[in-house]
Amino acid sequence: MSTATTQPASQLRCPRCGASLAADQDWCLECGAAATTRILRPPSWKLAAAIVIGVVAAVVVAVVVVVNALSGDANRAAAVHIRAPAATTPANASAAPAATTAATPTTAATATTPATATTPAGGGPIASWPAGTTAWTVVLATTSNRAAAEQRARDLIAKGVKAGVLDTSHFSIEASGAKFVVFSGQYSGQDTAVTAETRLGDKAPASVFVAQVSPQ
Image (tube, rainbow, N blue to C red; front, side, top):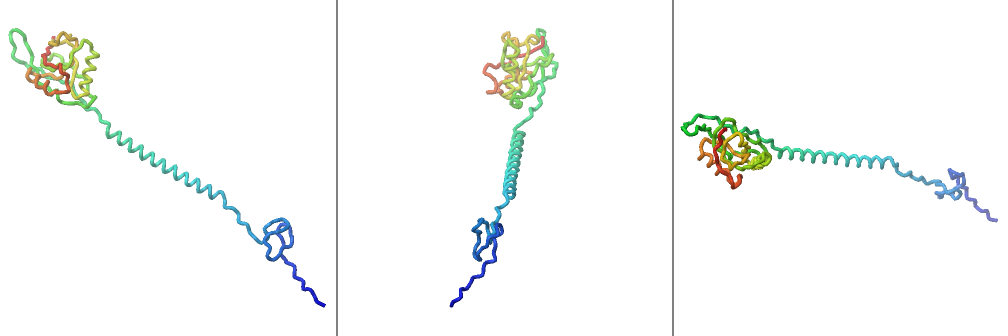
C-alpha cells in the first residue's frame, strides 16, 4: 500500500483580498491585485512643471536682454546722426566814411564773410539788411510777395548759402521794381560782390546779379 505525499500549502496571501497564492504567483487570481510585484508610481507632474517654467523664464529673460540691447544700439545710432544747427549771425557790416561827391553821397561798408561760407543743411536764420548801411550785395531772387521771398531764402540756406530778405520800401536798390529781394552778403565794392557771386557756383540760380543797396 502506497502513501501519497501532500505538498505543503503556500503561506502567501493576497494583500487585498487574503486569497492564498502560490510561491511563484505574482498576481492574485481572485481580485487581480499585485501580490509580490511592486508597481512604481508615475513621476510627479510637479517636476515636469518646474522644468517647463524654468525654460520659459530663461527664454523671457533672453528676449528682454536682446530687446534692450537692440534699443540701446538704435538710440546710440540716432544720437550720432543728430547734429545741432550751428548758430549763425546776421551779416552785419560796420559803416565807414568814404569819399563823397557833389552829386550823391554814399557810405561804403566793410566786406563781411563771403557768401560761400556754409551753414548746416536746413539750418540758420534768414538774414536782414543792417539799418543805415550802404553796400553792394548779390541779388539771388526778386518777388512781390514776402512769403515767397522767405521761402526762397530758406531753400538757399538749406543749400549752404547765407541768404536774407530785403524790403525795397525801406532801401534803394536796382531790382526791376521788385517789392522784396533775396540777397546774400554786404560788400564794400562792386568787384568784391562779383567775386562773391562767382563763388556761389551751382548753389545760386542762374539769374543772380550784383546791385548796390542804400537806405532811403
